[in-house]
Image 1: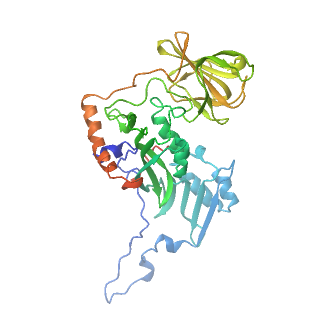
Image 2 (image 1 turned 90 degrees about the horizontal axis):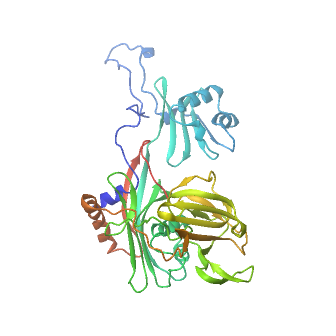
Length: 438
């Protein structure tokens, strides 16, 4: 069912109240007792219906946090009255972590005719908005619920030069490009195997708040095929019953394997694995037992597999290098780095796709690239020639649940054009909900 696919979006909505039923209401209530016809009425004793909040507001003060600001400092700069500042900070402290404030956060303070606080809105991003509002004689503070619209979009295209160029031509974000390539990182090498005429399809989520785009959700479906149609790669996003998520082939095999085919998915191969190569600097013929992947300086480099750092430092012509040891006698080598990932040390444990460093040109190098090598029992192997098993395979009831959840999406794709919105849904993001963006 489509609902099962959409549940894989990483949005978990709990319909219980986030405010313990202490919700606020801007509608005024009538507390007075009307006099009877003909009766003498004490006008001082009759409470007229309170005005709506908007009618009470006589002054609005807005401000933006700058680098190094606290909320208090920003409000002082915006000339928010002292008592009001303390009311805001004291009440927001119950729902807002002041250690997470950032430059660019905004606030709006509404005051009545006597300069008293009626409401404060604090927004750190479209999904995180907090309100302090006066209710009767007290203030209530809470993180707001945010109504969102989610569009499930399908796009199909053809490769003319490269995957990156094809996505850029369709004005798709680099985040989407890299995420698409990452799905097939263990099955297909976009550095060497892409050919003109290859085709791709991608179904993904776009999140909007008040018609403003705020981010990409999950890629629900991805497909890449060669021009002849002989080789077709498909991946469906699926959340297992234990809560873990991954992309799986139509038969239920996880697309991820124990090793990535490339630690830099969009890098360009400039030198392959060979026993005889003329060295570009030394000019002598000698083995090159790895793959050179050219990419801009600073491009992130991923760990090819789960493992442990056994070397992090400078090693001769390799410049800055990281070496990882993996189970079953495997090691991977990453050379010519511009810098190491923050916090990476010898003996650090890493998991597949962790960033371990960044492309550079240190050591004996003619330009920014990664020298990537893999050895098995101390024998170097061609990284692009090795085959590895899937990390997991769905079986039994889990496989049946997965296939049930993919059928309706596939049916919609059969009628899809090159760019089409397949499905639109709306929901209210509550404070305890979680959304995963690319």
